[in-house]
Amino acid sequence: MSMATRRFAWAIGSLGAAAGFIFLVSLPFLLSGCETLDTAAEIGANVAVQTGTLKPAEANLLKTSVTAMSRSFKEITPEQEHYIGRAVGATLLGQYRPYYEPRLTAYLNLVGQTLAQSSDLPETYDGYHFMVLDTDEINAFAAPGGLIFVSRGLLKCCRNEESLAAVLAHEIGHVELRHGLMAIQNARLTEALTTIGMETAKTYGGEQLASLTRNFEGSISDIVKTLVVNGYSQGQEFEADQAALVILGRVGYPPAGLLDMLGEMKSRLKPGRLDFAKTHPSPEARMVEVQKQVGRPGPVRSHPARQVRFDEAMKSV
Image 1 (cartoon, one colour):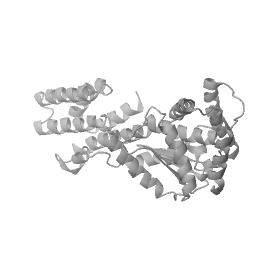
Image 2 (cartoon, one colour):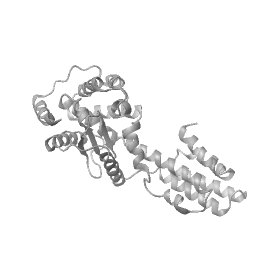
Image 3 (tube, one colour):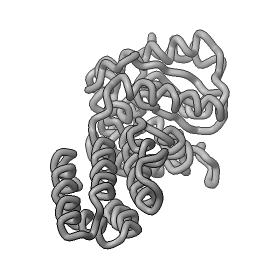
Image 4 (cartoon, helix red, strand yellow):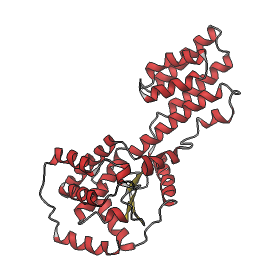
């Protein structure tokens, strides 16, 4: 039994035998989509009323709760994604100061926008935006909707534009693959299930039930925790690296830039710090996965013009 299924069973278990019956009816449909889950809840509630294990009002409450829960599976719109990203970004900027250096910011956005336009998600609701964070931590964050933050510490791991492009392409990969939204949706589902478990023991309707239909209630802190404290899963990080390789190739940057950056990061990361070392797979593990795709390319040979503008922009870092 998966963790999600165990949590579902725990939440439903507090409702007693009648709700447990509805859970058993609905379980095969959990991963089949919203409509089938709603249908299963309808059937289960009706049978519970007919057998006398639930009053009609109780059955309606459970059906409403499951319907609200199923909505959490629906696709988030680009506009919703944008506002989620803004809230996440604002929370991050409450923890990290932005680094105000116009030339560096303009350069970061020049490279980043070029890469984003070659991704599988070239357009978001309000476009991509790139910012430097004033911290020596080696880290970067990609908020839903295309807000990407890179620390000064991580920029110091980049010796050329090719390496910087690899960093930005990796973060764009997270946005493209909607890894942040996956964290939010999981948090929303958990909240919905917990609310179902609490509500039947209380009165019908009320604030707890209403909260089920509020978009993204309490989910911003969950995604920030994923970005800053827990990190994405190892599989998601490898997926972002693979997306980065595709983006880099489309623009014309060599894949060696990603390996060069990971090698420099390996030499700079310190165990125990709250940075890439805690929230990402080790640079070695990522290098192994990248090399499965591109082999062992030689050292990066940066184009002279690229190196000049890179050195000029990085003077303030």
